[in-house]
Image (cartoon, rainbow, N blue to C red; front, top):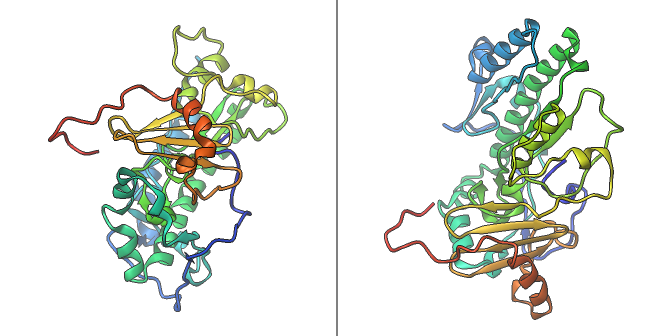
Length: 326
């Protein structure tokens, strides 16, 4: 399951003012946020310690039912990972995100300010570091992927896989130049989309669920899979019905909030963003997966805006003067 309607990796629509320049050299630059670690330091990273600790627990588990969480820091910045993972990706061959130079022209002031402050994209491109930063992110992803694989191998080797539910997720998305933005700290698809995989002990046929869901749904899902009566009331919704059958939907679209009064709703093919000052954005993810065209200014979509807007929290009042900005 993912919080995105579908993958856009294979869909490359034609657009004007699109840039994705490639490097002219495969020489890898380094910085404080992107550094390869020598082999002798590989076992001493914080994430390596987490992997070893959890594997040790799984090899000698308690007799009663247990809950174990493995929290890996990567691929969070800084991208300090073993050098062999950098070697997997040649910067000269990396496919960079498609970016429209005028992408923010139809974005409200708050969203535009978030995208451009700090001016990460300007700095990265001005110093020809774009492919190397993407290389660092890919290296960090591959590193943590290997650590997750070791945990899964241990579950298989100990026989625990037959009685253990495994849930894998990330806490936020990450911009690598999309919408002229880097990192998270925004309400667009790239910031709010995360991986989410649920594997019960005896899973049904592998199913890819396109229904947008929320990370808060993990709690009631774990409770139901464990055979525990969930507390009531609960703001979240168990994902067990979606695991078992297709054609179902979450009772309500998931809402993401960043800062007071700024909310993003994902429902079906729609993403609707409304800011504290009343500015808004509307995207049809099926027709516009890169969120290049804000439909909020098109009167033809006024009914859609009104319908989605009713599902957002009612706290549109702006922060008081002098309040800290998120």
